[in-house]
Length: 122
Image (cartoon, rainbow, N blue to C red; front, side):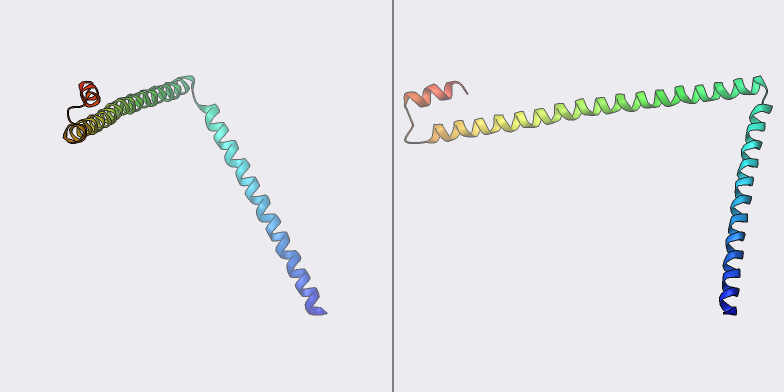
């Protein structure tokens, strides 16, 4: 029984310690926030202007970098697209040429009107 009371007292003490720690952390956070706000309020107008100019310059630089990246991606897309189209077109032309040679070499079709008519279009 006495052990249970000691355990309960220990648990209550631990809970109280935890609450105290949480309260201390909240107080520290508030103090930190207040210090940051005071530092911002202490800035002179010139410092604020310089800070804003720096942010603006960084924003412009980021926009320029983004524009360059998009331009390069666009060029790469056109280059790859043209290359892909040319490769497919060459494959198609090669297949048509092979088909024409097969038809011309076919003994059963030699000297027929259909062969002459179809091979003229190639």
